[in-house]
Length: 197
Image (cartoon, rainbow, N blue to C red; front, side, top):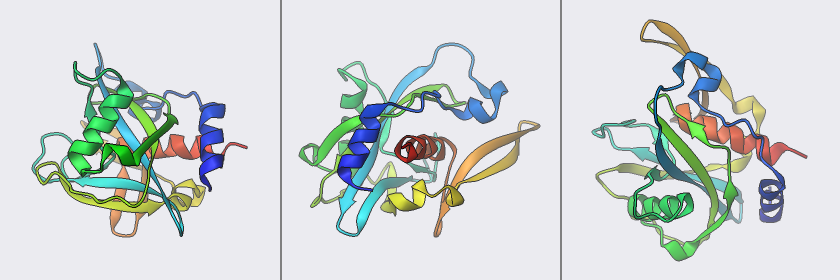
């Protein structure tokens, strides 16, 4: 899928589902106020085709240790907007220069069972760029072809016993990587938007 088509479909309209862990597990919706957060959904236009840049979190982190994620985190009081937070976190975690990031839109807000209201901000990360991962937070930075994510045959629904109840979640296994949970849920929303005609 080319750059112009992606921009057109993102600006035309979103799926409007407000996805979250609670969509598959309605009883998981967190009680009380939610912590605002933002992630960058980084699309990389490569000669061989568009890719999505992802990170693998380090194993010692308190939240989501070792999991595949987008660069991002809490929206701080000093962040003027979710977009600014997503860019700041990407620069801090991955080391991509801000001048290489071009924002193009947003996906639906995503609520996690851990109490975060995440704004997924979509942007192009324009080659050439180098990555300098923050060694405390990021164990690896890698790319997945966008075509793989858009192919419904690659999307799986799994379940796991959690706190005595069966919980359901999306997964997109890619080679040796296991993309699941909130990241997979946001990728499902991205695929819904981009696959709309």
